[in-house]
Length: 262
Image (cartoon, rainbow, N blue to C red; front, side, top):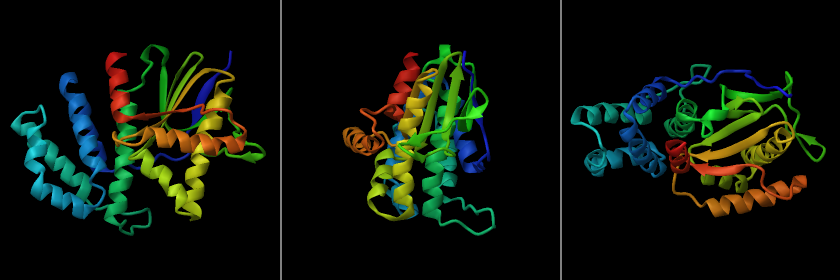
C-alpha cells in the first residue's frame, strides 16, 4: 500500500481580516451558513477594487444586508468584518505597504482556502488527514511532476485531504476565469498561470497511479464561464500529451452543494 503525505515549506500569514471573517462564517448554524457564504461570494465577485467597495457601500449595502438570513446584530457584525476585509491595510515581509487592490485580490483567494479547509472535504467518509499549502509526497518522497521533459515539481496545492488510498486536493482562486485569462497578458505571470494548470493536470495523473484521486481548481466567484475554462485548459494540457483533463473545475456553489448533500 502506498502512503500519501504533505510537505509544507512555508505557512502563509492570513491576517486578521480573513481569519475573523472565516470564523464568523463557519460558526453560523448550518441552515444559515451556506446561503450567507453564497451571497458574499456573489458580492465579492463584482467588487475587486476599493473604489468599487465604497460605491457598493453607498448604493447597495442595505439591499445586501437585507437579503441575509441573519439577525440585525449578526448583520452588523458581518458588515464590520467585510469592511475590514476590504479596507484594512497590510504590509509585506519588509514592512512595505501592499497596494490595497492587491490586498483585496489576495484575501479573496485566502478566504476561500480557509473555507474549503474548514468545511470540506466532499468525500468526508474517505478522509482522515488534512493540510494546507501541500507539496504532495508519496511514500515520504516529494512527488515529481513532469510535462514531457520539463519538471513542474516544487509547486503546491492550497488544501489537501486524504485517507487510505484516497486524495482530494484543491487549488483555490478568487476567480478562476480571471486567473486563467491572465495567461493571455504575457510576461512572468502568464507563464505561471499556464504552468499551474499543467501542474494540476499532471499531478492528478501521477497521483491516480497510486490513489483514488480528485483534484479541483476551485473558484470563489460563482458566476464564471466554466465551459471556456475547461476548453482552454484542455488546449494547454495537450501540450503535455494529456488526452483529457485529469482535474475538475468547481465553483463555491458547486462545493457547497456537494458538501451539503455528503
